[in-house]
Length: 376
Image (cartoon, rainbow, N blue to C red; front, side, top):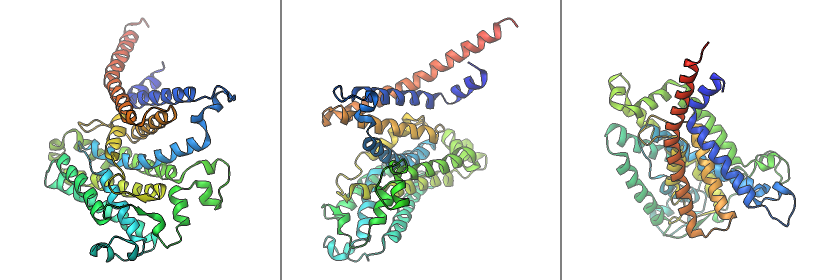
């Protein structure tokens, strides 16, 4: 193997390993879902159906956005357990903002919220999610409270508030009297549908808008995290906060900003997810999303000890989770076993990643020693 390629593979060994796992999952699912009586070879696979691939891309877009935020928090050696509950609260708040007061539960505070146009509602939800994220960061970074405790309280409180204000009933998007067609295209439509206004075929019509959002946010997050000075501060604070603080960096602000990003990403993902589902049932909306985000980040190479991780790895980890869930559904495994299967594969992936890194080091050290001892 040429030296530049060997160095690149070693430097990105986690991403390479998880990408290989993703390729194995895709190949396995494709082969196992081929209809033997349908003909068409690989293209007869239910996994490769255009609608299925489009739905996978849509979910990768939604999950990937909030997973990037959680991944950045994990790089600072923190954790965010409030993602799913916060999405439920923000989803309820968004639907309350775009529906008439008379269609809401008979609660004084809820009835007092004025109806606003849906573009303004999106802005308000983004501001609310960002403010909550900053609150988490201030409590963790400045007051030095444990991130686990702070976000665990958020996990319990936000879903409880969502259930209370919704009167523990389902809040529907159809209750809105506004023209939400453009909102639907932006949240649950495709790039081609947004540009042309029609549901037709073609490549652009197979690209969900949520996937487009993910690409944009991932590009911005990648430049911020891996090409900026503040990004280096985030990695430094995760590796050794005390040493970073003594070097003159305000680690409290760095950590707070990381949680602010997580809050913004959660709020951003909450709007298209509400449009995709069409309603919010507070008791189940976004359940376990925080665990999926943590799993995606860890699968992608973010160390829970902090100081390690990449945006590309988080995207690969998210894709693995979504493809794995799709595989479980297509192969007809019992729903009760789906989470167990996903958990087992995640564990195997992380185990292989940890020991695979050691194996990579041994292989490359042997290759380097052989090259050094070879006669010139």
